[in-house]
Length: 259
Image (cartoon, rainbow, N blue to C red; front, side, top):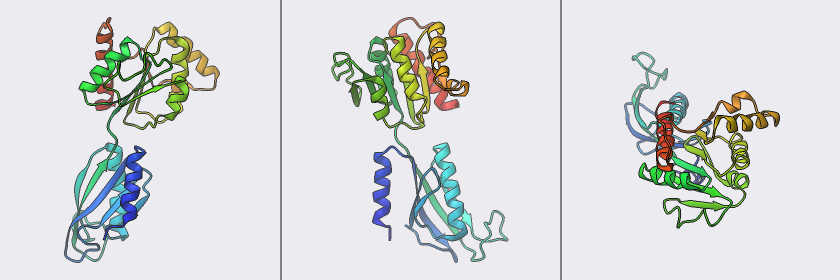
């Protein structure tokens, strides 16, 4: 019987955009612990709730669930519970266990800091590609549902403060395309303190270098700044807002698929 606490915990993780692996025992053969239907929830740190049988088999499954979360890849696994069989995991009871490791992660999210013309085009392209979109700006007349109908959220206020409110993870792609040097720096300073999959910032090399120097003086390291894709986007000679948006999303796709 599956514990109600397991589903409550899963719901909390989904609400907080925390990756989770839900392991379901599909089938057992021979003398094996657990029964079909047993479930276990595993987080990125390897903390688990529920059980699929306990012992060495459960420890092995938790390890592989963490690996599945790291690779964002669901899978069906079969384990031989025998020390003599090839691939056995050192249990004396014999038998066989098959489990489904279901990786549950939040959808890819594009956070756009800035609500100008590039941001509008970026939202259109990202929406076509299936991203969840959040737009942040300090100007309500720019950051609103009329200008960004594709956005799930339009957050108006201090850009740095609003970025602090946004939950981010490895499936979050942050694009900094504000209207000026000072706002870009505020956004980047905040972003470097969060776990985020991708950070990109628009601007000339001169402006980017100036921002980097300011952040180095504030205590950020060269290693921190190496995370940033700047100037943002693939170098395809983009000039218009639409072309810049395509170059940005192309870079994000390349990063997501190839690292």
